[in-house]
Length: 255
Image (cartoon, rainbow, N blue to C red):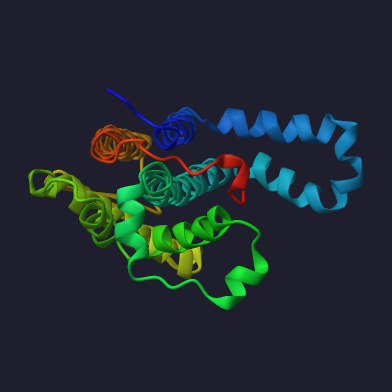
C-alpha cells in the first residue's frame, strides 16, 4: 500500500502519544516521591527552589495527588495532540493532492481569482498557487467536529462513501467534543472526561481507581490506533485517485 509523508508524520506523532499514555498507567506514588527527591538533590534546580520547594513538599506529603495530576494532564495533552495531528493530516493530504495533480488544481482553482496583490507580492505563478492551495486545504477540512471535516475533505477529493465506518467516525466526534471542552474551558472545572468507542462510553472521573484509569487509557489508545489505520488507507486512496502527473516545483513553493 502506497502512503505519503502525511501518513508518516501522523504515524510518528501518534506512536509517541500512545507511548505517553501507556507510560502514565505505570506511574506510582513512589515514582513521584523519587522525582521530588531527585529535584531537591539536583543543584541545577537551586535557582528555582524557592518556587519548587512547596511543590516537592506537597509531592512527598500527598504523592497520590501528584499521581492523579500527572495522569489527568497526560490525558489532556494526548487528546489535544491527537486531534491536532489528525487536523494537520487532513490539511496535508488535500494540499499534497493539489500539489501533485493538475486536474485537481484546475477543479479547485476554478473558483479562485488571482488578485493584483498576489501578482505584486509573489515572483512566480507557483508561489501564487501555493498560497491558494493552503487556503483551499484549510477550507476543505474546516468544521467544529471530525465528521464535517472528514466529509468535506472526502467530497473535495472525490473519495468513496465512508458510511461503513460510521461508528469510528462518531467515536472520533466524541474525541473532538472532549477536545473542544478542553480547549475552551478551565480544565479544573471539567468533572470528568469521556469518549465513545464502539458502543461504549468510557469515563474518567476525578476519583478513579488504577484499574478504571488503565481501562480508559487502553480503549483510548485502541481508538487512536483504529483511527490512524483508517486514515492511512484514506491517504492511499487519495494518492491512487490523484496521481502525480504534474508536481509543482518545490523550489518555487513558499515553505
